Each structure stands twice: as structure tokens, then as C-alpha cells.
Amino acid sequence: MTAILDIKNIDKHFDISGTILDQLRLDGGRITRKRTVVKAVNGVTLSVMPGETLSVVGESGCGKSTLARTVMGLYRPNRGEILYKGERIDNLSSSQMLPYRTKMQMVFQDPYASLNPRMTVRQILEEPVRLHNPSLNRDEVHDKVAEVMRRVGVDPVWSTNYPHEFSGGQRQRISIARALVVDPEFIVADEPIAALDVSIQAQILNLLMDAQEERGLTYLFISHDLSVVEHISSRVCVMYLGCVCELGPAAELFANPRHPYTQALLSAIPRLGGKAGGHTRLSGDVPTPINLPSGCVFHGRCPHAGKRCMTEAPAPRTMQSGVVVACHAVAEGRI
Amino acid sequence: MRTRWQRFKDSYMLHSFLRDPVALTSFIILALLFVSAFGAPVLAPHNPYDPTTVDIMNAQLPPSWEHGGTEQFLLGTDAQGRDILSTMLYGMRVSIIIGVGAVCLQAFLGIVVGLLSGYVRRLDNILMRIADVQLSFSTYMVAIFIGAIVQTAFGVAGYEDVAVPLLIVIIGLAEWPQYARTVRASVLAERRKEYVEAARVIGLPSSRIMWRHILPNTLSPVLVISTVQVANAIMSEAALSFLGLGMPVTKPSLGSLITAGFEYIFSGSWWITIFPGILLVLLILVINLLGDWVRDFLNPKLYKG
Image (cartoon, rainbow over all chains, first blue to last red; front, side, top):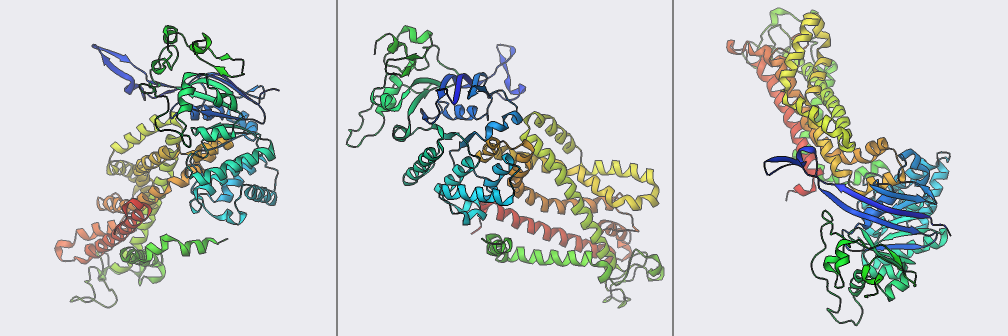
């Protein structure tokens, strides 16, 4: 089976040093130009298979959202390739990208910010239909929008209302409707439930999973909620400081985490009846992505770090169970 | 399913407006002033633009309630024998046209520049430096410079015809950076929001994202500065006219009426200056008070008690 999306060795760096005047520093009597670069995503490689839900997990600032936005073409990667069904899409101009816009869509994290407050729900939902199907007449556009609204559980009667007149959950439904209205096959969901109430989270998850079943959708699901990820994913990718630590089938990864970071992360999931403080504690803080550690990015906090970890970045290795792990200790059999 | 009118009738905006006596009074006064200014050809007792109706023998008559005043000229006459009330109404019309016209031009230039420099980052530096250069010239310096050249080029008679569009262009060109900066600041805040990214993910072209998605969300500060800027532009026009670079005496605005009367104020004809002055102050005051209300209404962080 060929992958629907291939991400090959993607780097995304942000220059935060500002204008040239901000970059100049007086250093030992000489003026030097210093650039500050945030290395948000470093050498990420993964492929998404048709019909699956691939979840990307990791703590705040590990580059999950940057990865999602790079995939959608909102950011241009500094290195690497993104292929959609074997065709390269990361270097296309916005007009060349247009046909892919109907195939790939995105659901955003914050339903309060992702809907234009000055447009009615109808305007929000009709705009993509009109753009991508210029041949449809008014009634057809209208019917299409009404049908999608019913599918996501928002009564089309409310289509003349503005986003602020809806609750957070309803807004996220509208946001999902906007993604579905162009009939995509692949949806990037960037923490779609992080901004919602727990009771609403379940409804939105069910909506996403129903849509997947009906339309045969593929999801790239960005989340930091590990229990949700365990519930909905077919495969899981764990990221730390912009690098992939471990990637594998959800059941296998949750049952038998190999990478020391995954182990620590999973031990932090609160369990019913579990004792407080039972999780693995990592020493120190996450290093800044401006000065990435040499070698394995996790070596400063890893209980199993050896000499090799400090100098040589570990290459991803496929284990017998099908899990891909990037860790020297696992490769050397120390864990 | 509600119509626009129903939405407006139920809106918080109307509610807060009707419960703010200052805003309501200002609005009523402003509406009266507008109606009387633009209805001047119908409402005014005399036509100051028609020299045949003006009699020099009526010059400098005091208001009707003063000694020597006549019923014919309620607020007295000016040095040419024109009825002050009528001239004021016509003059206010000129002032309002110049004020509103200049603000439209400012807003257009400023919004285009502000949108471009906020959304297209490559243009930001150059456009904002141009705005800085423009801001470093005083409005009056630009106006005096252009006005003097045009007056020389067209001569006094020709200048009369081009004075209104010229003043609109001068004041419009001098003040657009205000808008550009305000719009740019809002665009920079808006473009980071997810709805803009959503529009890009849909594949909408940049121009549509700028005009249809970002611009409507930056309009509240634009609305607020517009009210203040109308008052400012009317004042600039009055100041330029006072300096003799605005409207000619034959087609007076409020500012040139004040100047015209200024020469006679020490000979006792105070009404030529004072009445247009009061009208100008009233006009600017109500516009500013309305602007304050708009600002308070659009900024919920400034709720007063």
C-alpha cells in the first residue's frame, strides 16, 4: 500500500533575530552579525497510510504544530520533501497547490480564533465550495453547505449567525464542517479538542471518527492528550525537541514503549487507582530549540545516556515489533 | 433567520447608543448641522455665491437684536454685505465636504498601505519608512508648499475652482500615515490568528484574504480614528483658510469666514468672526464626542460604570 503522505527528512527553522540592525552585536570591540534560529522541526521522517489515524504526541513546544503547518504548506520547510501520493508538494506555488487544497484540509486548535468573527457561518462554509467548484450555482452550493452542516450536527437554520453566537463545541463542529465541505481525503487535526470541555471533547472525537468511517478519511492527529491518542490512533509518533523518538502501532507503543522519553511520557498518564508520584521523573528542563544539544537531543535528561549519545544523533531503527525507535541504548541492547 | 434591520434593532450598539445622553445629543446636533449644511440652498435666506443679491450698502450690519440690526439679516452681515447665517451654512457645507473628502482619501491610502505592509512582509520596511518621511513633514508645511504653487499656477480666478479638490488632496496626502500605522498594527495582530491560516489552507488568494478576511477585522480602530480625523481635517482646513491658503473669500468655508472677520474684529464687527467660530467649535466638538462614544463602544475594556 502506498502512503498518502510522505514526510522525508523535514527541517523547519525560524529566524527570530529580526531585522539586520537587531542582528548586529558589539563583540570584543568588533561588530558581528548574530542570527538566532529556532530549530522547531529537525529531520522528521514519517509516512501516513490511507485510512489510518496517525497521532503525533509530545510536550508543548516540541514541534508538533509546526510539523502540521508545514505539511499543509503554511510554512515552507528549510530542508526535506513532502510528498502527497508520490507527488512533491512542498515547493509548489499557491496556484499549483490549489488542487491539493481540496484533498488536504486542516482543523485548528482554537475554535474561538479559527472562524472569522465578521463572517456568518454560511459565508465561512460557502467560501471554500465557491472557490473550488466555480461551476456550482447558488442552490447547489447552498445544498452542499446545508448537508455538511447537518452531518456535523449544526442545524442549517443557524447559518446566518455569526461564530460568536455559538458555543466552543459548536464552533469546532463548524470548523470541521469547513474542512469537510471540500470533500478532502486527508485531514490534519491540530489539537482539535485541546480547547474544549472534557464532555465536549468526546462529542468532537466521535464526530471526527464518524466522519472518518463515512468518508474513508485519513487523519494526521496532533495532540498532547495521551489517553485520547491511545483511544483513536492506529499509529503513534512521539516527538521531542523537533525530532521523532519513537513511531509505531498505537497498541504496541503504549504497551511496550522502548525509547526512554516515551517511557517517561507514558508513565505520566494518570491512571485510575494509580498512586500519586509513580511516574518516571526526568531531571532538568527541556533544552531550548535555539541551541539544540549535540548528538541525541534527549541525552541531557536520559537516564541511559552514554558517551555515544552526546556526539552522534541516533538513526531511526525498525524493531521486530514494527516500532521505529531512534535511540542508541535500544540499538545497543542496553534497554 | 433575522433580517439585517432586526439584527440592528436588537443590537447592543443601538441599546448603548440610546442610553448614552452625550452620544445621542451629539448625534442629533451633528445630524441637524449636516441637514442645514447640505440643505443650505433651500434653507438659507440668501445665496452668498450670487453677487447680484449682495448689496455693499448692507456691509457689516450687526445681528438683528443689536442696535442697528435688521430682521433681514439674523446674524448680521460681513464686510461684503453677505448674510452671515447663509454664508455660515454654505461655508459649513464646504468645510464638511473637505473634511469628509480628505478623510476618505486618507483612509483609502492608509488602508491600502497598512494592509500591504502588514500582510506582505517584504513591503513593510519601505512603506513604513515612506510613512515616517511623510509624518516628519508638518501638514501645514506640505499644504502651504502645494497651495502656494497651485495658486501661482492657476491664478486667483482659477484657484477658486480647484480649491476644494486641492484642499482634499493636500489634507488627505498629509495625514494618511495615521491610518497606515493603525491598520498595519491591527493587521499584524490579525494575521497570526488561525482564521487567516484557515483561509490560506482553503487556498484563497492573498488579495482576498487581505480584503475580505483581515480588513473587516481591522475596521473598528479605523472607524474610531475616522471620526477624530474628520474633525482634524475640518480644523486643518480652517487653519489653512485662516492663513489665506484655503478657500477664497468668494467661496468661503468656516475658516475663511473667521479670517475675513478677523480684520474687522477691532472695529467692533465681532459677529463676522464669532458666529462661524462658534459653529466650527460646535461641529468639531460633536464629532469628537461621537468619536469618543464609538471608541468606548468598540473597546469593551473601557467599560465605564
